[in-house]
Every structure is written in C-alpha cells, then in structure tokens.
Length: 159
Image (cartoon, rainbow, N blue to C red; front, side):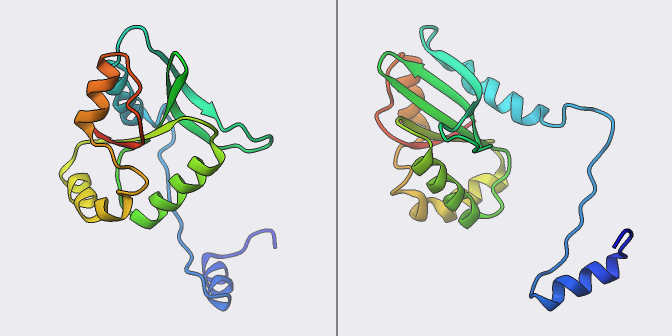
C-alpha cells in the first residue's frame, strides 16, 4: 500500500495483538540530545586527568549497530557508560543492559542516570532487581574514578 491510513494501520496491528503508537519529533535543531550530552559531560568532569574518555563506542560485534554512550579507560581496565535521561521502563533497561554486558566485551559497566525526582523514585523501585547486575553506588564509583582507579565493578551513578 502506498498510503495506508492510521485507522488501517491500527486495525492491522490489532489483528496480531499490537497497539499502534505514533510519535512526532521536532524538526529543525539537529542536536536533539543536548541534555544527554550534558549528562555525559558532568561525568567526564569528575574523572582523574590521566583517564581516557571516548564517546559512542561501538560494541565489538561485526554488523552490530549498538554502542556504549561513553568509555572510560585506565591502565589495564575500562568502564563502559550507558547514560539514561529518564527511567520509565525498568524491565527494558535491565534487558538492554544485560544484553550489552553480554555482548560488550571486557570491562565494567556504569549506568549514568540524570538526577531527577522521577529517576530517584524509579531507582528505589528497581534497585533490588538491578543489584546483582549493578552493585556499586555513585559514591564508590566516583571516588575511584576521581582517583584514577578502576571502580572494580558495575554500578549506577546519579548526577
């Protein structure tokens, strides 16, 4: 079909048990992730000057289009960073992280979360589920990274 209506698309989706969702995105400004970039910069500003910082680091699988938002490197270690502006689906976050950890190669993972009331509430609810995958907290991770040391594990940083 060249020009299906939204009603027809909705009916087709309903037949197979799906809800149709359509979103509109603003046109114009090509940099739509300014808040995301600013969150990453807040973390970068906390790092010891001897540590390396890279952004948009591809996973080491051929033809895989996923990437870590950032990677912090020290001598013999690295930390991959996944930045989240808003946590609205804990299961999706947990699943996406587990797959990236599985496929992402050696190193620790830090989930960098924007400090908002909604994210704090989401993390309180999710923390028991994420504890096994992300045991370290903001203080432990930032203390190590400010000193130029490997944090020694995965965790969550809220900035």
